[in-house]
Length: 507
Image 1 (cartoon, rainbow, N blue to C red):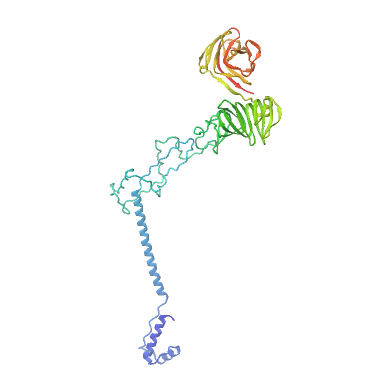
Image 2 (cartoon, rainbow, N blue to C red; image 1 turned 90 degrees about the horizontal axis):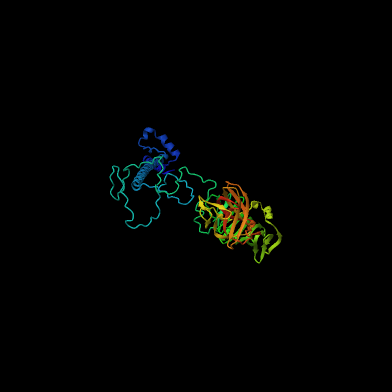
């Protein structure tokens, strides 16, 4: 029984006590007997108990009050949040200044332009402002009011003072600054071509010494500082100390000192121009050098002077010495022999000739030729005789006593395998004589035979075919120091034009 029912019962007990004068018994039988003896008209003084109210009504009323209070709080919070957001938008509108977009020019060479978004990102304020001295930067201009005037300094715009204009969805991209140096980025972006090099300067900025004057071939893959460069003959690429090269097929390299290399494999460059040190990782290397060349594999080092071929093998090299010599430690291999070089020296030597080498290596079927001296006669190389330079050509009228020619810039020492190549034209058909003078005051010549008139002729002659003018039975030998070049007819007189002269060395 709850509290309200207890109050009702006490109220009934008080009424019965007043009517009956006795302690009431509220049991059901007593109440029934009382109401049977007293009809309704005699029970007028009995006050009925107050009507009972359902127990759920107070709870429903309390829930309604709480709901109303919650709705009121929610409405108040929403209004306050809207006002705070309005205040923040107006405060930002008064503080933010237009951002000028500037793009730094990439002066790096080959730097793909980098694709950039044309829409600037929101300005982010750093956590720590850089230190500035007072007066270093100009004071920010005051914010403008809706009518164009300025708010007082330090004033904060009131909420809702003026709306912040929304940025259009299709703003045009910012204009590029006029002082940008180099290529401008494509708004649509672009992709590097398949053969593009890595970013950065690949040649001139490198501090390592250059070891190769020029090279010929198809494509050269060069590894430098962990990057691989795909180089073509017309690319401006200088091979330097530390470069690792691997040609597509084979490639030919002219060294800074004039030496010649032909490679069918993989090679690393090191050392200095006159003390070159190479590492042959794979394949075979042909060398024609006057300075000693050191070539290393995993276990051995061969030192070559002259002409030779080194082929990389499991425990060393297969060495072919064409001229000069190849040495390793105290052991050496002389010209005209091949042998296996391992850590215990040369073994299984066998006599060979240049024809054997060409049969062994396909990349040497075309004989390598090292240019030792070249004169294109664009200007006088040395003292002229019997003519003058006209349009890059030496022109003169010669007879059997007086030829047309020139002195070399420096005397040239004849080596085994040297060949002279020259281009000339004569006005009248004659049998022509080629002649070299030497520092030893000897003349060495060769009779060319009948030459057609009016045609440019390219002639090639091994210097070993020269004979002494005063003794036709004596042939030229390596060691002669040549000082001038000359052409003249054997008989009669004719106009001679000489376009170029060069001496090349070949095995």
